[in-house]
Length: 128
Length: 128
Length: 128
Length: 128
Image 1 (cartoon, helix red, strand yellow):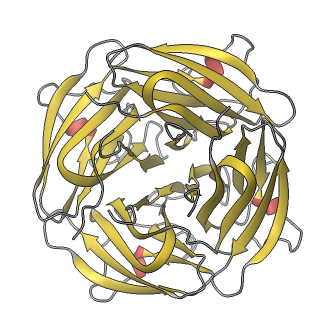
Image 2 (image 1 turned 60 degrees about the vertical axis):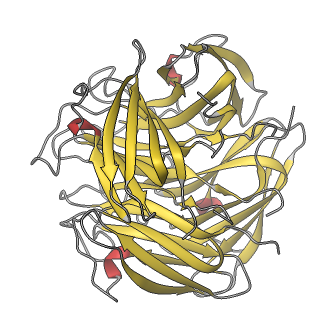
């Protein structure tokens, strides 16, 4: 199968909402990265988080099996450093094989309300 | 008319919300693929669903007539295998002719609330 | 200024929610096309609506002045044919000069709730 | 590191919701531009706002440090001219170095409800 996707993806608008209302983990406020790896090789992802007021933090390492997807809540990333809630960030994703990346936010800051937003991440060109 | 769109589209972030509240089918929680075929030829779509913990399942076969659209609720796909609600997935769409694909989610897990999110799907380059 | 944007844009996932709750026109359910024309020439847009079960309807004609934006509620299009609410459609936009097009939906089918979703439209390549 | 992103980004669908409900600034209605600068050079952004009924207004000047992000509420832009709430606009962003730009809207016009929508901005091609 020809290669599908890109090796570099960018999401500038990260910000995990805080607090949450409703049953965990379904109604926890979160930012999520959703990655699809259509290749026959495991994808080793390396994620760097960018901030407004300090140097980038990373790499956070994630693997996505061959012909698998993985939905990662940014909230759950703890190594090399736990993510702070309610703090603006962006992220830059590098993959060892081409993948496709999508961003999703769930916001349950208000009781009895769920808000969603998302977008495909921005793919850097192959030789970008 | 020149060709508009691509033959391969990707949505990594599928996850049909469960449960639903409100009148069916208008307020059922769903994930939806919206496809526009601007060509003069019927599009034969073949959809493969990717999961976190098993091999892809498919192909799900969908047709979109010449110069027609089709909005398909992923919930409604049953052959070769009914889609499980509340389970992360991604999808890879192949079409026999160029089409354009968009993804939409409606979430009515909470009574009296509707949340929406969506994005254009990711088009794989012609020779990608 | 170099040309910014594309002459052909596609939105497969149109569907104006019905009914609406709340004060008109601010809280009316709508689908909207938002177009930015950065050129020094008025853009003449021609919009064709695609359906699931009949031939496309159009052209709907819209102008966007030089160095202007225009936000058009699809609900408001009436010539050559009024748009039916709660009916799936897609649209194909042609412009005489390069523009950028974005899609937005506001859903107020439930009283006291507003849901939003949107995405950049899909730009057909210059020679696509 | 190779260059990631583009020097020109477009968002046609701006419209800051009005009014707001809930605690400021967390629940203020806003439109937001989120920019990631992965380069080793400070990005000088110049933002022009386009309207339906008058010439573009700008440039609004914003800087994003080297290897930093910045999330800017459009509501907060005041020079050369404060942004009017509840007025349709679009924006054109120029950057001195390649960046990635995302658009987010938070709508709290109804008490006890938050709605979100967003999309990656449209990147003009390098020589577009």
